[in-house]
Length: 415
Image (cartoon, rainbow, N blue to C red; front, side, top):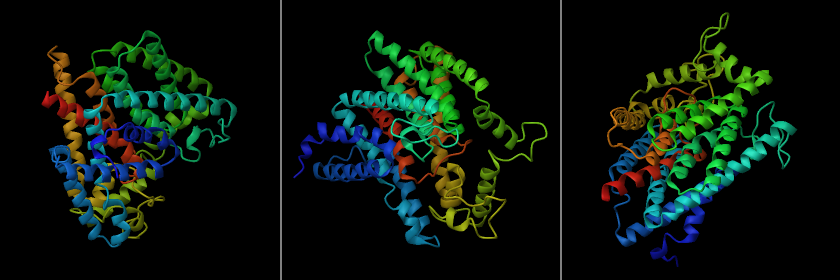
């Protein structure tokens, strides 16, 4: 029988931290850990009658969104198909609160996360550069065209992994006591990671890296110059790389510029690309048909091929490649409003922080919280392509900064 009094045991901490490297292998094992640990956590809270971690405003709002998503599934044309995405979506909010709980019980878990991120980032840097120069990585995965995937194999998401988890790594770096050699090592790692994300050819990942970096540099106090210097050195290296790699330059800059009509004699301007444009315009037609509650989670891939919805040469995909468009078409204005409110919250916190910085007042947020907020910002940013909002891999990645941020906010209130 599980000893719930030792819920914050080394074993539980190890399982939660192991999600970071397991995300490299795919979504199955991380989701298994998330699902099982949240069930145990729920049972523990109910047994101990400790409801502080689940009866809080952010989680209750999230549960309301989950309820709306389930209702949308029940109203869809394929109920059981749609429910696969929405029925257990609530687990991700509870998982964020589990992280909050574990930090409250043992703050050493922050160090565990820091070191595992250092190890994973270092491993991807070594393997990614090896793959770039030798055409295959250390276990034989070959380049996909000119794209680096490292241990992700056929999944071209290495840049997404690095860019989305980078704000977390920086947050833990700021939180931790550091020796001088460690600062030099992390500086080198930051530069190499910045360049590797660019080398991956993932435009959205590179954009998110730049967005979070500028956000952090503007709003933190300590290590502001440190991050600015490492970022500028990375940009210098990227410039040299671009001059010597025309194909990479074309993919990262010229093709998007032509697709969006920024280059003379380019085609008709599109939203991000011709494929994205077709997905989004198809989704908008679907939204107009059911604007309140949408067609149901996971239903874009089913309905996009219908003649009365499809637009352009590439109307269909598993999702519209933008979180806001996806929620509009699959959960309607009602579901969309939850994500938009979250974005407004991040925007409000950011403006408040900027105000205290400019007026040289007491900082509204700590540097640690700014980095966590940067991780949330790149999740809720509306003006970029995205993955599937309901994909297991994706929801686990963006649940992590939310859990750390919740703990930092509520522990501050309780102190």
